[in-house]
Length: 390
Length: 131
Image 1 (tube, rainbow over the protein chains, first blue to last red):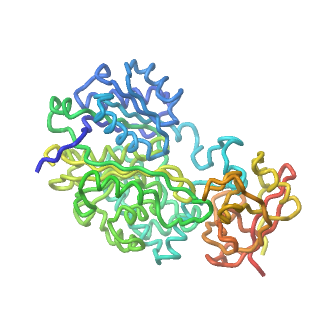
Image 2 (image 1 turned 90 degrees about the vertical axis):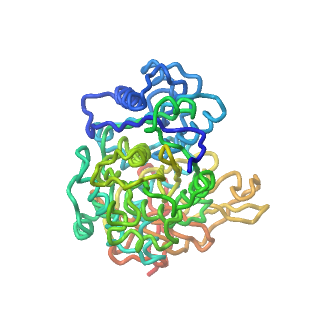
Image 3 (image 1 turned 120 degrees about the horizontal axis):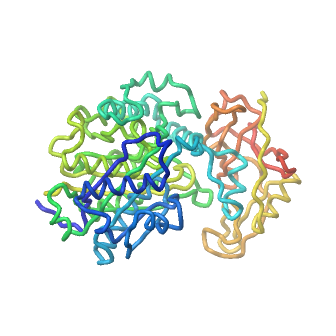
């Protein structure tokens, strides 16, 4: 069948660098933009919409539009951390459907590795941040916050460290074929649970890599997609949302995916069972486990059993995930992994993933982004895509 | 068992939270509830997040609760316990657990508030296991 859609992804590019000591952030934005436009068969002069996150240098997209020489009539710099780029995809779909732009460029770049690991400390937004006084003095960092989510999930559902470890094991099986991946060695469950404890129950190998780099996406109207050929990927549905601490009535066992998933699946007219491949945000192993439950790939609390025994490994498992090696092994540019989630899903739908991890006849795929902290305030966005003939 | 504790950073204090931080210096943990809907919320705000009323008022909490979840941060110079504690009043707050054995903590464990001076002589509420 051929599904109708509002917009297509025509171009993607993942920067090959993982440590960019000799490049500025602006330069990285421009390099990924050029790469994605070339991949689409377009140039910067075709771009009329520009999207970036709140960490991009300058006010919104203004400085980067100037740096790259873009002529922009539509812009969006929504900031939801690592999920921003999947939010941008949805907003680009809507803008294109409304006739506000025809070629939307979305870029991400960051250098946390070259600049030192600033990522582990909570960013200080000053005294205007309302929750600041009630959190910062207790020294929350991303690892101990996600550690608390994992600990609570274990308490309520009996999830084990070994089950979480299977998520890293699956990612490592895929990363061995990615020559750009930070970690290419295949690891075992024992390797993960015997790696140093960072903030229990999360071990070093439960955590994602820290890397420099970036990526870009080009989203185009159906009319333009027709001129670009069958490498264009259909955008079938998107959803987003914010989950927070709910005035003190907290529940750390789920993520914002409970909001974004149903909206995306409803728009696409599809269900989790229809997906041939998934890219799931993987800042930590627990992020993947909770997200798979929240998106409906298994029941709440069953995530541990679902991911165990290689079920996420391409070729052997029922639900191949993060075939580039994900944030856990390949790349987490700028501490923001949403961009690369979309890029690998597009590779799968084009049949351009590495032959060892390519899902045969991959027709429908999902990418999910998580931003902020799942144990505090978190953004979520889900994008459902289809092959050109889906 | 007592572990060494880090020097605690000062809280951020503003017009909405001044009374809370004045009270911590008297070893009191204040909470805010709404006079219109009756609900307690955390962290304390001028506007009730449940019903949007401005009629929020301070009251002194029991200082008692249970550990909702915790994580021992080990890869730092002075290890510490990050935790969410669910107070008897029903709201959960972010805190550290002190005066404890790191390897002998559990979810649902009973804890009580204890206060520590911060770097700039404010007072920070933390929690310890009930003996």
